[in-house]
Image 1 (tube, helix red, strand yellow):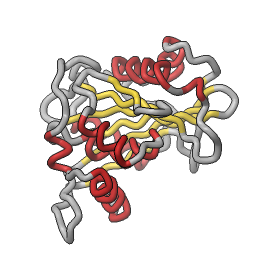
Image 2 (cartoon, helix red, strand yellow):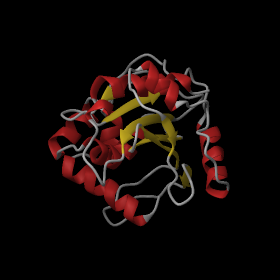
Image 3 (tube, helix red, strand yellow):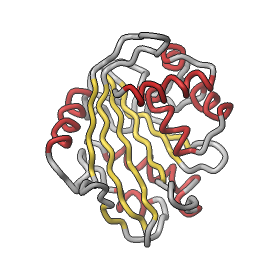
Image 4 (cartoon, one colour):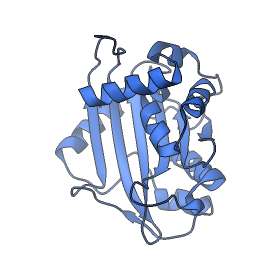
Length: 224
């Protein structure tokens, strides 16, 4: 995790009045369904590192946004959306101890698959894995806040009432991001977020709310 990323993480926690450890301990409990524990942290990390070196247009682990979107009633053709020549990107970082008021962060691995849905709406699938139980949602809070257009209060409530393993929840208010927690093989935590990349435009209402949640739920079930 880079210094700017750690600062964004700390800022999100500070704004919401939470710490990484407290956020991790606040999650709800639930059944271990979703991806069926097919993916381990090590497998996600090795795949992310491979994507750092090698370009790919295929989202790994069986993720098929076209199928998930169709099943959720979302219309429009789905195609890879390259950024800097890559539509699938990987990132991995080592854990960093707490220093100078910044929270400690565990190691992580992240994979992002970008697509266009319909004429021009860009949609991202973000997969984040950490080797510690119940930490992935906490580490993804800055991204959830940005993708969900959440206020500080909304972010704090989402963190407190985060999805349990096997659950998929939509962000409050505009419903522009859906977050699924997926069972992992062995120790660790795995989160999938489906959201619009609308930095240059307004959110597409057809890709919000329950249809977006259903598509994210279907993606979580595809993982193998």
